[in-house]
Image 1 (cartoon, rainbow, N blue to C red):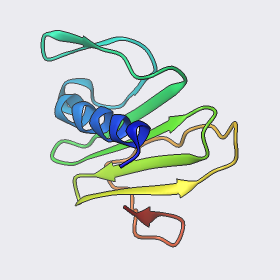
Image 2: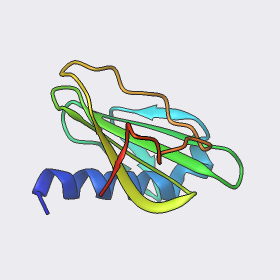
Image 3: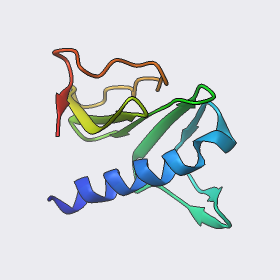
Length: 105
């Protein structure tokens, strides 16, 4: 697995563990998680939304061409190809990732 992809997966997993404390949020700089400080890699933005018993998380590097996503509805990570400079989507706990736009990893 590519090193950057592994980092993104770790970031999303870490974010999911704290989503109930944040509700809907965008993370692009240092945040407090579980007694420590977490900061995504340079140019990486993560959006997270918690709907009580469900969550959704998206991650995108502003200079990358892939947006990564996961929800509590599926243990699978998904990605879609985007144009460089694409603005990250807003995460949704009810987001459907099984559409033709998204590819499972």
